[in-house]
Length: 165
Picture 1 (cartoon, rainbow, N blue to C red):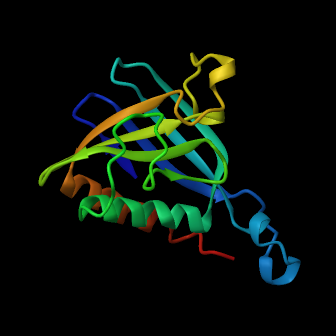
Picture 2 (cartoon, helix red, strand yellow):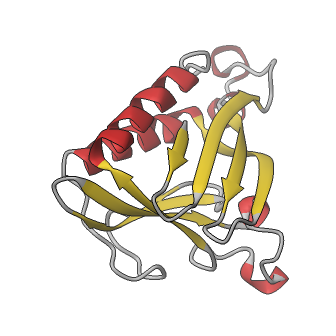
């Protein structure tokens, strides 16, 4: 899934593999270990600085929840979170703190999202003591509603090879 913002920022997220290839929840009984996905992220900030990360930061069900959240944004069902560090009901966060998404504002044609990046996904210039808080750095993403819908559908296609095990 690639998101190209009108701010000059961009992010491409791709599930690349299960963290533990041989673990199966039906035989090993470990639902969590069986379903961790390693995600590759290529990020560019609005000022042109870029970085990449590859980390096991989403479970299969959290990854599918991201697609659902993007569909909800596209259809106007997500509550806006005006401040980047404000806890809102519709901030999409995950077990690992690497990624979180929030909606800054939306109209009929566009939505201003924030992709919060921390821990291993944080930009390399982030201060060490700030790297572990989801609101320390966010990427502003100003996108058309159709682009968000397309991204959700692409993310679903990207996840097809990684069913919940």
